[in-house]
Length: 482
Image 1 (cartoon, helix red, strand yellow):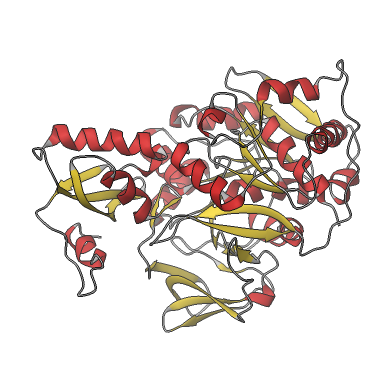
Image 2: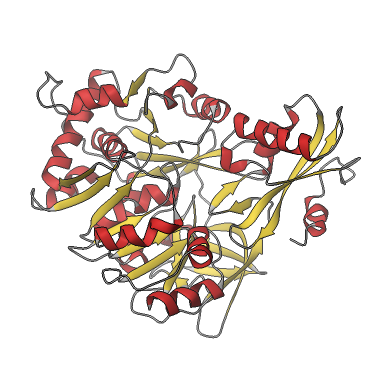
């Protein structure tokens, strides 16, 4: 199997594959024939730099054509793509390099400055030269004949203790997306679908272009920042048919804009964290459309959703996707591994996962009709605006400040983001107050990705701990009403 051959070659060369808009506003349409040819050319350039089957390639590129082509070039030759969010800082990138040992990093020129020395880099300027047909190029790469269990993708996911872990997805993961593409994402042949998730996240990797193409639709990529005031205008101007957004984006649109019908929009989908029923009602009233919520994890891919053709129940995470066996074991959602076509193989540095059931760590309940309802997490991962944030990452950044002795990070409820990071800090020196709180916030932004910074900073004499010295985060969460 090979995604670039089995999927891309199935479309007429002139058929629209994607529409891209860069930071300057420059718009471009790409046919499947051009995408396939440019992919083969970039893959040849990777091979010329010594990248081969099984080698890891990091991408630090935003939602633009070069990111899609870089991902596809890896898929073509059997290299393993490791997409990184463009907000990651040097420490985050150093951790990914240490764990994954990449052969090459592809990225926006300024972002590659954060990649540790010793990793060969290829910036957008050089990528542009490779894509320039007027220049001499390495021979295009042939499509490798890959096994379903060969590695295709690495996505880092935050945990409650330790640093982010690297989940490895095999080639079957790419094709397994057809299940959610058909039954939840719902794009149809000839349509234009926009998944707004930032590159570097599992939702972007599977829904920015893979799910639209598996549904016969074209993909829309917009490199600009999220602006609630212009989101619906873009959908109207570009005639977007399927819009996939994070719950935070839906909440901000509901609160900060006047919702109005967009004639081209047919389907709205959401995933990443629970979506408030009142927001769903607001969109139904303003746009005349339901928001189809869904649920999945980095390790599993999509598991549930408000299924195409079925009525939506506001606040529910939907039903299991067809064929996926889910159970509720003492309140926790578990999935039978063999029934999930997008289940990961292992974490880098660990043995393959071979247990029959995967415990999600999420508390849910089911109603009499089989709809599932999210209640909360068993662990301490903070889900803010759809981002999974491990407390350890925030705490490590805080403790690196000379004034901080100890720190704990927990979730605090937030009307727009679902939750925000709340930090409780024990000082080594300095005076607690707003000025130091702002200094610590800026310090975290510099040390790690800005989305991880604590929006609330509180000071305490000590942290509540167990007899073994572990922080009692549940007690701290309770103090914020979480």
